[in-house]
Image (cartoon, rainbow, N blue to C red; front, side, top):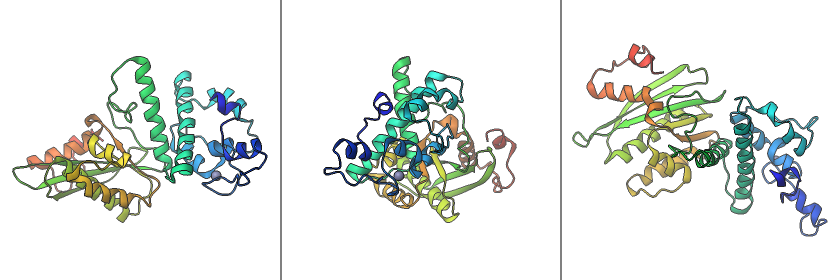
Length: 304
Ligand SMILES: [Zn+2]
């Protein structure tokens, strides 16, 4: 943040100024190609940066009108903090700015395009790792620091889709279920489906594939997919398809998700996935009513 406040981070704008244009005549932002790529543009005024702020917990909408400059903005940061914990908010914003810059470098040097949600989740992950080091507590999951015990609704304008799969090697037929909820915690829809797979990883990946296909068919475009299978979510987020038995399914999920910049995948622990877990268990036991999604059973309602 020190470099940021002193405007010495090597954005295209800074390089052009430093080199007096020698070899750096093009200082256009590589994302929007509309304005000079200053650090303030990257962090605040580029449409991509603005989408990240809106997707974040800060729900901040930066405006170039009356913007006081980076240093004064940093000094005024307490007004951005909503959770009452000043130091925690400042740390998180620092990690968010750093993740902005890393995402910009991935685009410029590796031609890799992140989604705004991914940048926000990466910032949370880095902040979570930092916090767990400070408090010397074992980390449960990099992405679930704020969601260790209960489901939390998505940001406004987004849907959260929780899915679960059960695998029974004796039967060879698996089932999965999915629940859609919005930022008001309202239950939007629920689906139950069956398929066959070879093992638990395949079952979880197939469940996720079914869910994402359903979303595309339903024209949902802003969706957070949550699963309690760390392996599948981790491999999809890192694009490291190292599990041979489910790699083809995970590759397919990535292909389906690629045109949707506001699709993201998140690991949650089982406590956050209680509602879909209830449907899966009740289905296995034969106690889940067929119309559970339209006439929600009381046992499920208390978990939503
Ligand atoms: Zn831009």
